Image 1 (tube, one colour):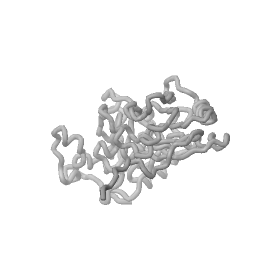
Image 2 (image 1 turned 120 degrees about the vertical axis):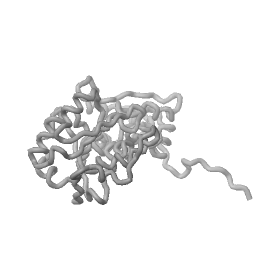
Image 3 (image 1 turned 180 degrees about the horizontal axis):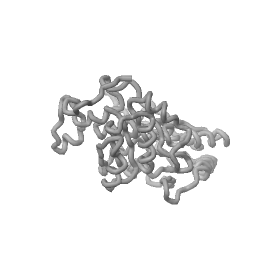
Image 4 (image 1 turned 90 degrees about the vertical axis):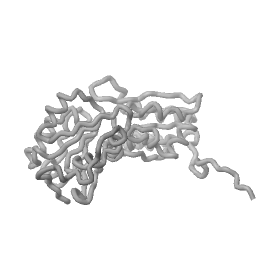
Length: 285
């Protein structure tokens, strides 16, 4: 008896006319997209995508799909969020199959909740397709784990600016500094001087390791390892620019042993990254 070959997409739901799927494209590498995300792109009549989506991801779009760029970048002219949300409503009501493609994960600092609530308001059916958020996947591509048994049992994710473009007032920096051995920051590079000052004032050590991962999980990825106290000066001198994910904590030292991309380029990895870090603190909280 012969076994008929099956498509890897068999059994996955279809993107139906009049529906919107809010899809996470992951941190950059198109290979990190889910099978459900790829199937949606192959079926979509309309794809609305963000600035942080690697355009290589769009290669799965069918030839006659309409592509709409809806990128929002700080300090640059950008579509208003309400207009983007209403665009989704408009094309879905026209009977189109709509893929809303967002960098990372739609529900992690991605405004996915706002867009979904607008769809609910207008009685448009939707599905959430989670993606790998940059605060996990982007750091992994830099060889930095967000958790490690010898350093931390918790991690905090926060944003470096609010809707006004300023450092959020509602973040309890005292609580973050005291209770979070590892802090992962999105959209924080622009205000790193203010953020560093607040964390140090709240009790974090200026010599604590920090890393900036720019254009994470892409061919343009660049990593700067520094410390909390030197971060502002070092990032200014580096010439690096956003988008970036920023991480503070002893897990940064693990990059000396886990930089797998660096190893492919010839970097020598060390089995105990903490051995050469004199006075390194291994505090699991």
